[in-house]
Image (cartoon, rainbow, N blue to C red; front, side):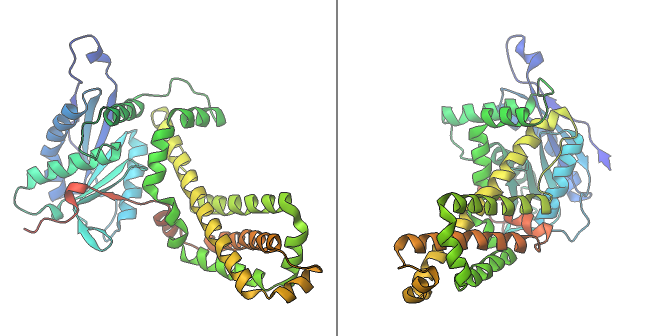
Length: 375
C-alpha cells in the first residue's frame, strides 16, 4: 500500500476561527496503476474545489494506493471494501478511484455514490483519454457533492445551510461518551432531515421486489393460509388487538432477520465515527423496516383481493359458523398478510448476504457523468 502526502486547506477566514475550523477528512483510495497516477494530482485540485464550494470547514484529502478488492469485483464489493477502509482510518467520506467498469441498469457510468455509506466510486477507464484531468476533477467533485446531498447544482440558501450542517456534523467528534439508547436517540433527534434523505436514497419500497426468495416464500405462505378453514376461524376469533400484535410481530421478525442475518449493522471503532455509524445503522434499520411495511401492505391488498375472489361466501360462512360480513374478509386478509410476512422472513433467511445488501442499498450516479465519454 502506498500513501501520498495528505492535502489540507483551512477554511478562509479573517478571524481566529481559521485555526479552529472543523476538518472534514476525505479518503482518496486509488487502485495501483492509472488510478494511482490520477490520484497523485487529483488530491490537490479536489481540495481546492471543495474548499471553494464549502469554505465553512477545512478539507483534508488523504490519497492512498489500495486495490481494495481482487478483480473481477462488482460495485457492491467495492463499496463494502471502501466503507471498511473508511471506518478503519476514521475518515468522514471516501472516494475510490478504480479501474473496474461501473454500470447502472446495464449502462456504463463514470461513477456513482452511496450517501448512506459515505462512499463514492469513480471508474478511471470510463473517463476516456482526452481531457482526463478535467473530467476526473468534475466527476470527483460531483460525486462528493452527491454524498453531501449537494448535487442539485443550485445556490438555494436553505440547501446550502443544510449541507453546511451536514459538513459540521461529519467533522465534529462526539462531545461525550454516553453509550447505547441515549446516544442513538440524540443522533436521531438532531439529524432527522439527514436521516430521511439517507433512507430515501435507499428506496426502501423496492426492498421486497429485489429479494426474490423472500417474496416467493411470502406469496406461498399467503396462498396456503387463504385456503385453510382453520385460518378463517382464527382470524374470526383473534380480535383486533391480537391481529395487531401478530402484524407487528411479523414485521419486526422479518426486519430483524434481514438486518441480523445479513450483518447490515456496523460497529464504531473510534469516537470520531460513532455518529456516522449510528446514522448508518439507523438509516439501515429504517430502510429495512419501511421495506417490510411496504411488503406487508402489498400482501394485505393481495390477500384481500384473493379472499374476495377465491373464498366462496357460502363455504366461508360454513367455516365461520355465522354469515360472512365485510369485516370478516378484512380480518382474514389481515391475518393472512401477517402469516405471509412471516413466510417472507423464512425466505429472507435463505437469501445470500450480498443479495440482501444489494436490496437494502442503492447507488446514485453522478448526474454530470451518467454515460461514459465516447472517446
